[in-house]
Image 1 (cartoon, rainbow, N blue to C red):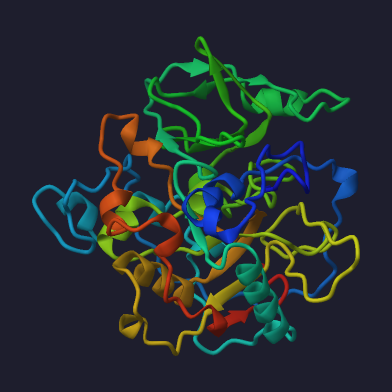
Image 2: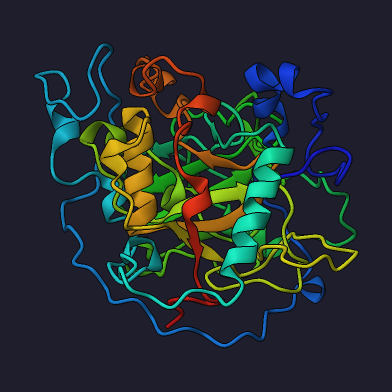
Length: 396
């Protein structure tokens, strides 16, 4: 879950920027703290809203999962060259991480019933965007997770529990999940106080997430996270109360990768963090929990887990946007966004550049973002054309 220091000191040592003028270049990164805590089960109550009918499943690609490969320096997004032809193939790893029936991969029908409060939720989204830096940021080096692919021969390590939240009870179940983690030698957590990290091992069909991860002389420790078994047949949601985001939705499902931007298409829903969300007792599937806070019971706060999309009637190709922005906008029309966390600014996440640079490769986003800062990539997206879906939309 993402916080500013004034809201939750335990979660993020970030300071809100004094002015928008000083914020845009640097404080968006400092304030957009992403990640997830582990609320005690007694503090989490599921919403009682009725489920909407599930969206029809779309055929999923069946290409084998392969480690990520970054875009070559100088490559043009969406263009195929000798150096980047592997990225322009019809399928990339993130198309098929989870079961084909997972909500991550289901297109939203063009005609679908909207939430009865859709118009007010849209107004609330626009209010937050205006109040917090006037933009929607894309987290890169900080508050987004690097993803490291381990092969079958990667040595395993016990990851220790770092009680950074000063809990009064032990975490034996979490330690058991971290008893044998194949952490590649090049692995390093994200920058920022949340220090997220993901390890994925296709050979054992297992995924691990870590929050506030630290490596001290080869001994790894983290404050929260979890392990997901049988990833390829899972619904793409960590079992309660595990996982690093505030909702239990894994980074690898909703982050945007360099491979997807290079290909020119994202084939899954996109995770989005808001600044202010509905109280933690009210959340929507696919969220398993929430870190929302609404002590004054203000109206129209958006619940975590809620899904929304960009109006599919918009011709994205005519918008004054970057190439990367248009790719994201089209995915927002087809698969939509899912609220998975809180942050100091409304923000998306790309797969952290450390996934590439720790292998000695170039940060691919410099080229893929056309040299623009992360807060400007989505300029021109018509956020006033959002459509919010019913509570528990698509729940089986």
